[in-house]
Amino acid sequence: MNACPTLHWVTCPNTSRLRHWKCSEGLNEGDSIGWRVSSLLRVSLPFLSLHSYVRLQRASHLTMFIQSLFKPGGDGGQTSDRVILDHIDARESQADELATNNPTAREVATITSSWKFLSHYLRLCSPSRALFRIMRSSKVLEAFASRPSRAAAVQYEIAHHDGVVHDPLGGGSYAFETSPAFLDTVLRDVPIRTPKELIINIGAQPNNSPHVGTLVTFALAFGLARAIIKSRPELDIRVLLDIVDTAPSVQEVHNGITYQRSQRSTNEMAAYMDDYMFVLDQFKRWSGIPYTIRRQDSFNTRPQMPIIIDDIVRQHEVLAPMLVPRTRVLALRRACPVEGCGLADKHGKRNSYEGNVITFQCPHHGPHTVTIDVNDPRSCVTLEYNTPLRNLIRARACLADPDAHYIRVTGSDYAGLYQEQLLHRHLDEPYVVVYSPLITDWSGAKLSKSLYVKDGAYGYLEELGMDYLLSFAKMKEQGKELRVIYDEVQRWVDEPFRLFRPYSIYYMHTLFQTSDCRAGL
Ligand SMILES: [Zn+2]
Ligand SMILES: [Zn+2]
Image (tube, rainbow, N blue to C red):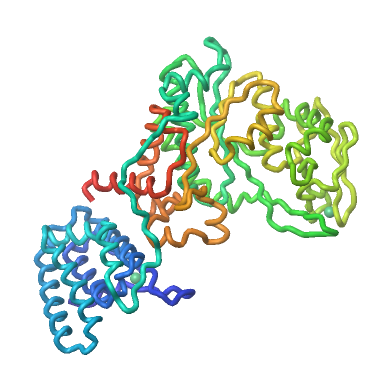
């Protein structure tokens, strides 16, 4: 059989380790599974027996490799059993030969025992299916990894646990244990008969393809709406996604003051908006709940805005130390209007306020002012806010909206002191926020979108084949079902005692593995 011309092993330029395989041509659906498996064995097994794949993360790469080979056929390939067994026999006699002739006894012992270990599993049932299975099994990978070898060392820790999920009752999960208790609470301020629309409000800054945390928050918004409409079918309800479409591009420091240039990063954003729309469309289809998207422009020009900003500016001396305890000034920004400049004082340190007039400073072009006119919604359109200030303005705008009731859904990293001190104590009316469970890394920290995007964090998740949870684009690419996340979140909404706790990325990964098993993979 000729060597497959389409298989390439790629060496990582940073670590010089064999990291990825890729194929520029791809495998045709017409290729027989037997051919694919035998090419696979030819390519991968020399690596296995030479311990290149003994280490856990390598084996995990092989898993993805095998999965990708199997994807077009999908049935595990009964037809290839004979071919595989022939290969096993050939490799086994090679291993025996090696054991007889090779002087470094320990290495040989490891090679042959690894090989026999593998072939034992392969013979247990349909070999192609078994090959596929064992590569998925973390226990076997672990056994490979813990085998003694000169070169091999386990680089990634494996969490040991009993796989039992506990949902202890306490705090929120006790108070809102049942669906009626939970829904009554979030709908407390929505009258039984109301002409107003009910809006479930979420937000996003699309600087990458959405990761599992964002997907969970979105699924919760649609799930909450679905549960509400089931108990209050007369309500007119939709999901509203607020898009933050400005991002700081360059920062400059002049005389100890940080200035930034924001760009309406529409081009970069457009690349990711397709993924956001795809996800929203799916959730809309599954939940039957419509959604709309709002950009900052239309948020900033709502009729209530100048009244809210005017009030905040007039109270800035009282509000600022509470909203921004680090600088004790309002982080209200405006880009320098001089053509080609656009610099804005990031923390608003040099701003001055007089009545309804705000004066901003540009390090190159001096002062520029905004006069807030409560009768002109466009008078605030050039203003930008830091997150706590935007949060407060949004909440006040929601409460002042004559046409709608709002429920905010956001990540639970904002729950607690942050919202109590930076938001709720500055509101005159109750404002309902439902927090979506945080998806955490191994240490219990929030899975961070920006660490992943900017600093390339979470390399270990990539090597463990779990990077699909970091980016929806990868999830699609790897054929993982978004529905798995949607269904799980619906369970949390319907049994809300599951809603008041974080979930680890390993828990989410297990859901996908279980779903793959059910699908017969
Ligand atoms: Zn190729
Ligand atoms: Zn300027």
